[in-house]
Image (cartoon, rainbow over all chains, first blue to last red; front, side):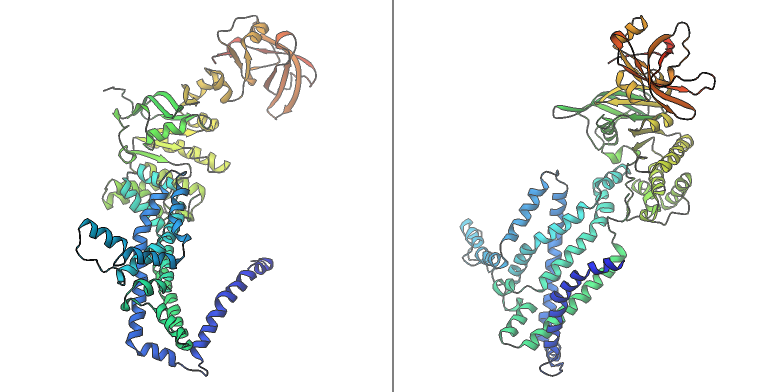
Length: 276
Length: 343
């Protein structure tokens, strides 16, 4: 890297510093100084099973939501990428339309759909399939459904852009070599798309960790995520404890994603290596 | 069923997209072990023909036979052909060994047989020692060799090559051309080679099939196609030539012409007209000295032909000096060197 090239990365570095490093440092200070040096907030977090349960639950929900998005989003992206080129922009557009609405609006919409007097219960009652309204709102299921619906477009777009990098000529080559469509997909397309899959999964996982509106409005008491805990603590002006929880969440996220990346590096290949 | 006794046969194969036809009634028998080139400019239908043959595209009409079996209804994986792609299409996540082993694994070969055949194929393309590398770690020429090895490893009766030299630079291209010729000689496989490059076609092929606008113009041995082009397009596309319309030709030579055009190759014109030769009078323009030969143009003078320019390329001779530019000159051409062209 020449000197002038070094200077050109400065704005990006400055931005990262101001937008990420400084806030994290401030949060860290909040967690460790109250007002003097103390580990009391971390001791409180790790000392009480209730917080650890919420913490574990948060990681699990994020993992399940990310995986569900993957299982639904990957086939959607595959479908779009295999359509004729002129249809693809329209299909992608349709996938992205829900993102024009705020998460809050979409969450309220799910309340309308899933509630006791909601659309689904009305329809099922009218059809005579059930006799009493089903309890759907304020359950874990409602939280999962809404989070997946909110985050799915991100997964579809991430997978789609990874898939467009794959040379479809490779599929033809596999076919001529004697692979049927299924084997050509399994042996060539799937391995080359895994990098995008992993990126999508990681992004959804991280975004899920910070959700608090959806569990607050659609979930029951047991569905609270760490985000809800932090909101509660902030509301009670327990800044130090809220900061400590945020730091634990951030650290856990970094460790988990590093592990995922490390594992992936052994098995996953970029579609950009090779070629002409 | 038709019996052609050919490893490969196109029977009236047509491909239409709406009103436009990409390929129009291609009928062509390929002999066993033959190296046949589909040559043509882009949009001539050569790639369409190859795609129909490989099973990537369905023919609108007609049928392709491989070993006397109609294959139109078969997917690509059941046609048992080998193919080298324009960009090589190596699987980037697999080693050289796994790339070459792929067709064998798809055919459920045993591990021992796979190892043996991959070894032999890599040896054929002189890449033994490279089995563990990834395609990204190979040079362009090496990738081309891996692609070749993958195409031949399962010993398919027909080997398809789609513009497979065009991604290489000139020096490598010439090297790989010799390599392909050598491998064809060793294996004796029937090869269908698609290219727009006439020098590749002329130097490699047993026969060249020249396509234009979706139609087959002429199929013949390289020398025959050069010496006896059937149509104006063929004469123009293969090598360089002078095309003279019938009226002008008959005026010049005083002889009738059996078709709408006459073709005279530049190297068939000379400055020492013999009795019986057709004589062409004009002014010399634009002489270029090329060492072994001299190239230039002769602007015909007089009457109906006035203004037409003929290219010539004469061997340089110490004794017979070439006239200077601007000078009047008479050039001769033997009647046997004049080819009658159809439209």
